[in-house]
Length: 64
Ligand SMILES: [Zn+2]
Image (tube, rainbow, N blue to C red; front, side, top):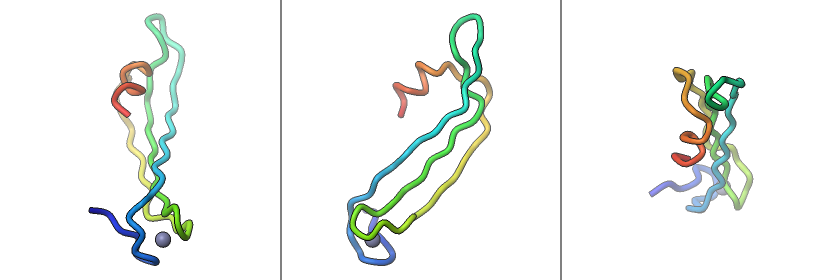
Protein backbone atom coordinates (compact mmCIF):
# COMPACT_ATOMS: atom_id res chain seq x y z
CA UNK A 1 0.00 0.00 0.00
CA UNK A 2 1.23 3.50 -0.84
CA UNK A 3 2.04 5.93 2.00
CA UNK A 4 3.31 9.49 1.78
CA UNK A 5 7.05 9.79 2.51
CA UNK A 6 6.39 13.00 4.44
CA UNK A 7 3.30 12.36 6.62
CA UNK A 8 2.54 8.63 6.11
CA UNK A 9 -1.03 9.30 4.94
CA UNK A 10 -2.21 6.56 2.62
CA UNK A 11 -4.64 8.69 0.57
CA UNK A 12 -3.47 10.36 -2.60
CA UNK A 13 -4.80 12.15 -5.63
CA UNK A 14 -3.84 10.82 -9.04
CA UNK A 15 -4.04 13.14 -12.03
CA UNK A 16 -3.71 12.19 -15.68
CA UNK A 17 -3.03 14.35 -18.69
CA UNK A 18 -3.02 13.40 -22.34
CA UNK A 19 -2.09 14.94 -25.63
CA UNK A 20 -4.53 13.96 -28.35
CA UNK A 21 -4.68 14.97 -31.98
CA UNK A 22 -7.69 14.79 -34.31
CA UNK A 23 -7.90 11.80 -36.63
CA UNK A 24 -10.51 10.47 -39.04
CA UNK A 25 -11.71 7.80 -36.59
CA UNK A 26 -11.54 9.99 -33.47
CA UNK A 27 -8.83 11.70 -31.40
CA UNK A 28 -5.61 9.74 -31.03
CA UNK A 29 -3.45 9.98 -27.90
CA UNK A 30 0.29 10.26 -28.42
CA UNK A 31 1.45 11.21 -24.91
CA UNK A 32 0.31 10.49 -21.35
CA UNK A 33 1.38 12.06 -18.07
CA UNK A 34 0.50 11.02 -14.52
CA UNK A 35 1.14 12.64 -11.14
CA UNK A 36 0.49 11.52 -7.57
CA UNK A 37 -0.02 13.96 -4.69
CA UNK A 38 -0.67 13.37 -0.99
CA UNK A 39 -4.11 14.63 0.04
CA UNK A 40 -2.92 15.44 3.58
CA UNK A 41 0.25 17.49 3.14
CA UNK A 42 0.15 18.14 -0.61
CA UNK A 43 3.57 16.68 -1.29
CA UNK A 44 4.05 15.53 -4.87
CA UNK A 45 4.92 11.85 -4.66
CA UNK A 46 5.76 11.32 -8.28
CA UNK A 47 5.22 12.36 -11.84
CA UNK A 48 5.96 10.51 -15.03
CA UNK A 49 5.09 10.58 -18.68
CA UNK A 50 5.21 8.22 -21.62
CA UNK A 51 4.95 8.50 -25.39
CA UNK A 52 2.45 6.01 -26.76
CA UNK A 53 1.64 4.88 -30.30
CA UNK A 54 -1.64 6.53 -31.39
CA UNK A 55 -4.17 5.17 -28.90
CA UNK A 56 -7.85 6.08 -29.32
CA UNK A 57 -8.79 8.74 -26.73
CA UNK A 58 -12.01 6.89 -25.83
CA UNK A 59 -10.05 3.73 -25.08
CA UNK A 60 -7.52 5.62 -22.95
CA UNK A 61 -10.36 7.29 -21.03
CA UNK A 62 -11.95 3.94 -20.23
CA UNK A 63 -8.61 2.44 -19.14
CA UNK A 64 -7.82 5.31 -16.78
ZN1 LIG B 1 1.74 13.64 2.97
